[in-house]
Length: 90
Image (spheres, rainbow, N blue to C red):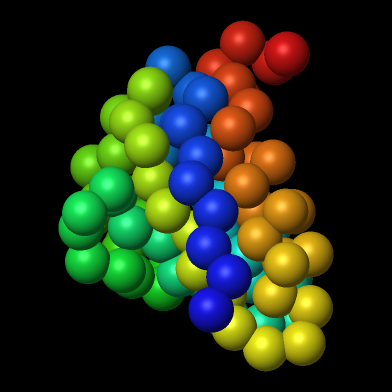
């Protein structure tokens, strides 16, 4: 099962806007994507409550996982969103 380790780019972590953007990116993928803090339990990346519940903060490492046709492309798309700093608009 493909996985990607990504450092959370937003300084506020995966809360509010960054979490919503992550959920939108995960929901638009053809395969389910899950997310966990390093060494933590995986949760559905399409659930805003589960993503916020991770309490992933800026600079934390998270792991994305997907399975099925298109999993690698889905992970690339979601990892890009996680790595961006959505707080500064950059």
